[in-house]
Length: 87
Image 1 (tube, rainbow, N blue to C red):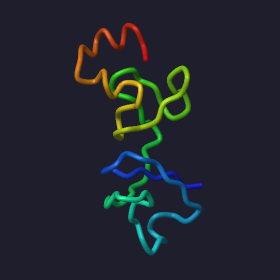
Image 2: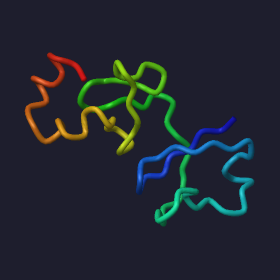
Image 3: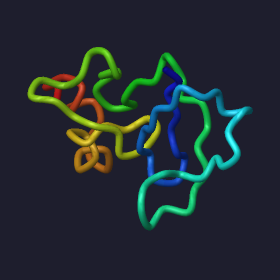
Image 4: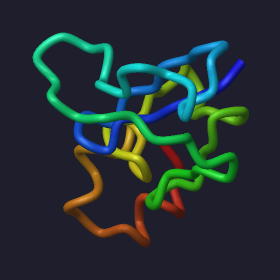
């Protein structure tokens, strides 16, 4: 399974067809006009460091390619205190 991310909305999508073989690379989510790209395997949150395989306690999702939903509101604040306390 191929994992893709939309750089416009930050959402993931999956396809069994490689991107270069797809007729349409548009983001599959409604109201988004982005085009998907292969998702990086080493993607992690810039604030807390969570990854796709090691999410925040209670779960999170990507709101930007390098920012999780738990840290989205914290990103504008003091990053050091967020990292010290976790998500």
